[in-house]
Length: 142
Length: 92
Image (cartoon, rainbow over all chains, first blue to last red; front, side):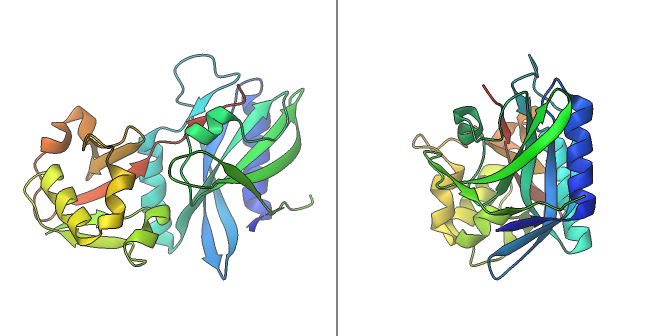
């Protein structure tokens, strides 16, 4: 299970809407205790995918390096990532599955007509990247 | 010895350690020492041909080794090596 803080969710939602009709992406920092994760910081990243960003994204490894440093300096961990699906549902696509690692919480946001509609979270089940499973997501009410 | 920062998903293979020290004069040697100490890491970092997996990025300090000398990149005692996952995707 993962809970997203109000501050982190606001950044994610705003990033998804401002990037529309392109996909947004970012990194989640937080903690894990007794199997429950809490994302306290969302870092909005530049979509580094070189091509049509309406249906693809990539996170620049340099941004991840910086996020890892920030997490360690704050006593947090990189616990996951987020991205948006413009005018599509919040599902974990085959492209998502083949390009994420197990062990992270991956939040997918549906942004329709420029407005956030819903978010779901998924984990890759294995390092062979053959299956994913939905993770319970606690998204704050604004 | 160089310091290797272990990303969250790989700590299950290092006994929970988020930082591991390993000896070596190059990235290949340091990662070789790391995976010798923690063999379960190896299939997650290397493919069957013994090459670093495409979704694994290695940094020496702030430099991506793809733009240096790849796994022949020299490593000094005080260097920090970071393992960074490639993360991408999309609705298509």
